[in-house]
Image 1: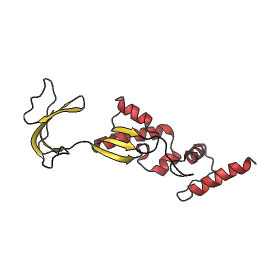
Image 2: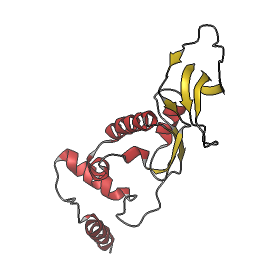
Image 3: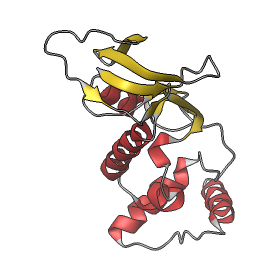
Length: 179
């Protein structure tokens, strides 16, 4: 239970001062003055602090919140998952309790958070990207570059300015090879 909080409830313009907030099983059960703490409850005096409702971010790619080009094109899946778990925890610690993921493989991360295995916000995933050839949702480039990056082969040189041209040329060469 939090005591002596200043509370912004998201409904009223006026802040509630010297307010108690009772939380049970990660859910707010009661907000008011002079709430009696349940037996064995942890009581935290947060005088001088303000509580607000959880924030919602309506456009995230939770799997790739850091340097997207480097992560997508040169990292292995296990590393991407570990970084995504850290991103989820960081979002929660910044006050985001719900995020809308607008493209990417976030279903596994969502399950880990929902199962309580790792901390993070509630994720509303959309699934796969809708993307143009060599756009940030086209993972042919990632798979090709990733295999080259870790094997030392250099037949596809990914650059910051050239992925679209490289991908189009790569797809054209594959088509031409079939005829």
